Image (cartoon, rainbow, N blue to C red; front, side):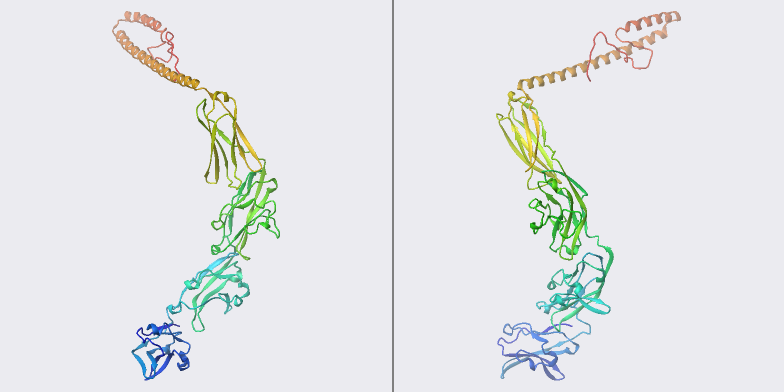
Length: 539
């Protein structure tokens, strides 16, 4: 099948009637007549037309559904009246190849595998003759069973579809863009089989695209439906809580609208209590109404639930459910158990050195992992006669939110011993942290600084003196050992005996300063006493 366009662009400017004629064995048969289609040769009737307007000089001929017998010479004739007509030559020779037109092409896989319960997309792209680009068309998918073809999808009339495919199939793209991909939702085992696509422009221009695609359905349930939620979450009464949730779903549903619902029960049954519904809050239990919402975007896989102003009765199991349509919906398990305890969290105060008459910044922080609408508020309780100002900021690191309040004040000595309190408030609960002011005088602070400097200088000086004396003693002792050794070597036996007495006497004389044994290799000053000049240094 093919659509052929032949003709000229220099036709007459005023139309009365025109003919496109084909020469057959020396005679001419009319292939197209602009006024009288009955004059057309039988097999050309309703198969030929002009592509443009004769007034614009366009006399191109279009032949639909080309066959081999259409091959041959064609020429154009313009007729204004009986005396003003003209045949345009040379004739155009039309050749028709034996094979089908390469303009009818399809690109589909030979095999596709899906898991039961998921949805699947059979990729399909097709082309067709350019002359049909602006023509209306219908796309039809067939499922082959027992050598018979049944309609799985019809773009114009769903009543033609096999009952089990009704409302279960759709195209993922636009036929005009050449996208004929088929989506089958909620796959069952009986959906396995062969599929092929067919395009229909009119009764003469329609085409089946082969080869067929074999769809395999595995017995296991789809693993594309997955979620990541904790088994337990603990929160405190009056605060807000976030139940983390991330989910996945079959990729063929990526562009489909969806609804995410949270249930406050252990399993899904008809009439199960709903904690959050994005489209109809009237379906939510009264206790949750206007207190629950999703923290992220379902399209990004974020299904985390936030409960504001937590109550004791909120404790219990929760699970998430996604709904694309009546057939593609899924409950994500296991459930998350929510525990609610008393509110015991307190803010943290970071103390600073407080000097009378000088400006000081005191910081108070409170951290939470829940970004609720009723955020915690930090306030200060301070003596009324202390001038001050407050600045508040919020920072986020990952899922942790840090609320910071900085109190700037200038205290005096009379405020010593008084208290500052930082309070965190939720709509129904609060707690506080108290700081007792320790105010120092400016003079006291200067005296402490001077004393500290003097102590440092004294420590450094004494350390240097100690090191100097030790080094000096060791040097002098070494020289005396050398002299003594020389003298012992030069004395006679009697003299040596006398020297031994002197040696002991010298040893005794040295004892008051330092107990040193000159005849050993160990540290000479290990037992030094230095009793005459005691020095105590903290090194």
